Length: 471
Image 1 (cartoon, rainbow, N blue to C red):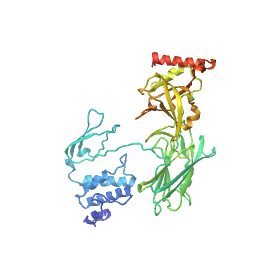
Image 2: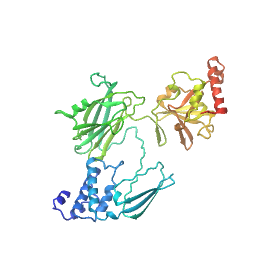
Image 3: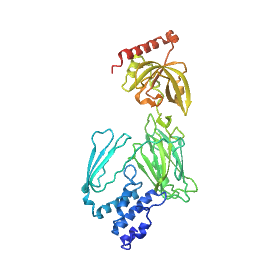
Image 4: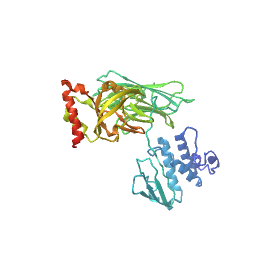
């Protein structure tokens, strides 16, 4: 339609509007970015024919289609939207009357945020943000129309069997390989990533993209990628190494097609250039260039089958548990009284207890330790920790390292950030910031082997209870 309008061969919009959905968009099922691009062309055609009556509804629909971050899903669709909206601004004759005063009152802010929108600054985007999930009030006065987009950003829990995939199968495997010094100067290790994917439609997927985020401290072997993109039997159309998307970098691989009858596989090496304490998982995402809803994401890691982070969950809430098992395990030498007092009095330490382990239970890959708080040495957020036994939750991989025994007493402290309020009280997460040290029994304290340790614990308790922390 737009080509005919440009050639001055289309003067009636009846056929064009009859093909629309609701008079404001032109769409096909499961083709979001194509719908945006097609609607942009339709708007350009109507503007070229001077058919302004329906254009305002189309403009509103287009402006509502933005993804988080302000884009329209893919480059071609975004360019066409900008071209169509720019032409609308040029052609539509009544925009100079725009004069709006907009006020936004966000929760926990005393004063509203005020904007004045006029013809001269109408295309300038304004943003406001709040961390509180509460209602807010928007007031507008004056003349004209403006569009407001409300975006809610949240973290969704990823299932253990990875994210549900739409229209693509994806399999990612990682293996350690022998490092050849001639391959990468300065590398400390090497992995090989093998990626296999297949389209689940009735025909092959057209242009598709594989986006591979690198592991922390790793970089791709560009020679491998060059070989995949050249020669008679080339596997990929081209590739890009994008270091702007994140500190770790991404490899963007372009495919002319993805077969719907057999797996399309490729592999390349990645090299480790520096050591890190915690290697964050990388991700592999395959998606259709023309329909971003058709995608699949899998995670990978050199030592985890699925690449997913370890987590501790309670009901529907989870938190990351990718840390050392406890603070005590990180000390290089046995602590004395002064070290214990200094560590227990750090600003983030919420509580210090003497506890007794009553029982333990393994559940969903975690260990739950039921602790009775015998003595509150330093009171914290938990208003009544001695009311009933408290649950201390740890990853099951830490069970052997912690080596906690039922009916034994323990000196325990932890950070405020490791407290987990529940409707039944307070749970405690065992992390790298948690101190857990066995407190000898009264009988053991009579033994010469434990006398110094027992005296240190008594002095620690007296110091924090009577004098308190001095920092």
